[in-house]
Length: 232
Ligand SMILES: [Zn+2]
Image (cartoon, rainbow, N blue to C red; front, side, top):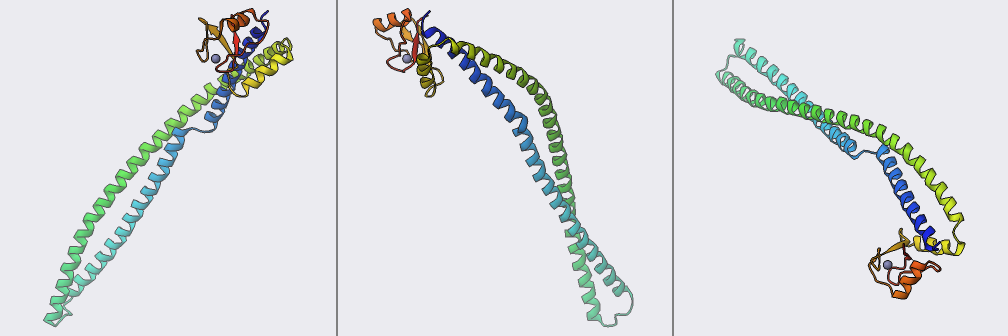
């Protein structure tokens, strides 16, 4: 048997182990954290603050309106009370009443705008809350599927580790060392020879190297990329 062949098979197993481990990490992260949910939560929080602010604005405006109404009422009572005997004072009160009425009319417009702002803010908040609810629901469904996938991946991982153990026992320790040392630098340590070229980097090794790689009696290293060449 070619010395590179078990290393090639080891490479296939390690590649799959890497893939499985990567997916397990991805799932772990996706179960702990969901960007769509995070975004919707932040958005909702911001909208709730806006809602609170426009509500407070409206309450303050309401207070202003009530105080203006009271002033207006008391000025009108004074005007019609018959207690004012001086014409100048009468005129002053009339002017004050006119001014209060103008302020009240302006305030009414502001109040109307505030009510509209509240309504808009409430709608935006409701829409966002619904989006968050949906995102949470989707996440829960995804989590169920991901937990299932995670279980299967862990089983597969255990199987691969077992296979790896069996395989490495049959490999010469010196060959395994070469493999491991290449793997510390690049995930793929073994390249196949395809149409006379290294499948990883494309270089065409000398015919002597090709011969040695096919023969398999020694470990042949690609002169360009440094990977073990496996000539099937
Ligand atoms: Zn190469």
